[in-house]
Amino acid sequence: MLQLRAQDVPAADLPEGPDVLQVLWCPREHPELPGRSAHWGPAVEVYRRSAAPVAAVLEPPVPVDAPRRHLPRPCVLDPAGVTDLPDPEDLPAELAARADAWAQAHGTEYHRGLACHDGWKAGGWPSWHSTDPEPLDCSCGARTRLSLTLDSGRDPDLNLGSFGELRIFTCPEDPSHPLLLNLQ
Image (cartoon, rainbow, N blue to C red; front, side):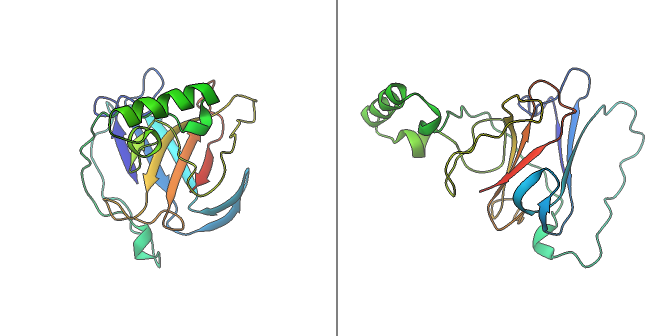
């Protein structure tokens, strides 16, 4: 389980009202979840809640026979604000060339230094390091946006599907629409 408070992570994709985002996942890998073709990873549910009515914080349940690598260990993340720019393939060719030239003039690479930061993140841009870019559209036709990236192997040392990044995309038009998941 991952829990983010809006005051700590403004990019946590919370609609007006709820101030807590909770991400729950089944600690087993599932093939081809409904509506998520080519997904071999955890089943994921996202809840947006208000912290005000919570009277007591309960211990999370421990699943029976779950692979240890899929179970989070209790920890506190220390969020840091970072500007995350789009993958060069998500930019018009002329703008991508200008961005790359600017980055080189400043001693870095656009793709490796400025775009699609790795690690755990709320919001930002997805990298397409394992596959070609893939449009992820909601069932309503809206282009989804990257809501969260949970990066396996980094703190908190958790594997969420093939030791890669589990990315959760949401509909910008209606947060009640089904999530789209992608593993890279």
